[in-house]
Length: 386
Ligand SMILES: Cc1ncc(COP(=O)(O)O)c(C=O)c1O
Image (cartoon, rainbow, N blue to C red; front, side):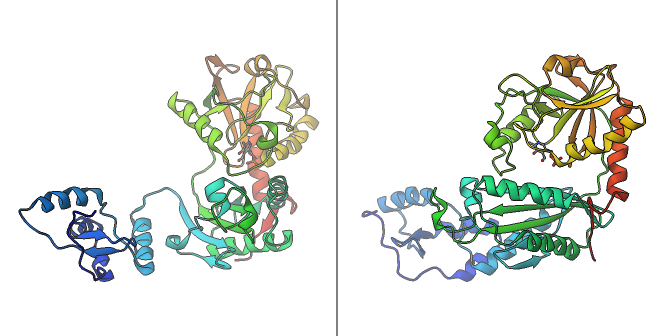
């Protein structure tokens, strides 16, 4: 530093940075950081040793511009406009804003939120179908349970959270898509302890998604990524690293999902879905929920399947330990979750399931749940006032 030319004193004016990204490199050629971290203009002394030192020094400086708040927002907008995803974000609620926004550029959360830097947050979803929220109460019960297990206090009581979620969907005008929401211990500081986070936070987002639920059979593999211990697997927290790695492992081998086995070797669940089987004796068989996430869809399927038992299409329903051998020699296997509803599995590792084709029970259960979403009882369908 000492051998470098002295920076002249005035701070580089902000308006320079309103230029587009590609100009910022040019700008940085004439800038240095002052001791206090602000950019200052630098005199260029040509043909001297100092010039080489300056070049070296300049190489250390990145071309990152310093932005004003309005410039940052402008860039957020441009990023969003250039972003090509197959989902549209229609509305967001944030208890930090204390309101609902519909401009995706402003759909952000604070970096000091304990959920962001420590994974101390929980989340849940609910499908939006024909202007109704499907199983909102069941998902709300689960997020409140997850929050309690994560020692996250509620920012509002259950009724108010429910009303906020419904109002967010209403503001979005979305009639078909999904609602996702998070409870977090909130912003505060960057410590491990949440003691500096004074107000828990609620965030929610409405996502438009037109893609229909598919009944096409898929392949699964056994996950080599370790399953979360029951204390964490039963909580729907934002710690989904094992789930993400498990999904990636599946995709890398051309499969849809990877199935976890529990520590006793019994079949557990997929990274964001439960699993079910139809045995040769026409039983609907599902792993018990004590070491895995208690899936709202799987539980609803268990209830709706009772009708199939009454009609003689299933012999019985059993929830218990399921061995891999039992699973692989089942007549049918299916993945069950709110993102996929009921999806038949045709192959698990090298083993074809049944005759390797989509089976009638998986299709019947998918039809039942779709029907339930369209015209089920008020206990599973909450109307959204638009
Ligand atoms: C690990 C895990 N298991 C199961 C499920 C299925 O739960 P639900 O039917 O409530 O979507 C999910 C859903 O996200 C999940 O993340």
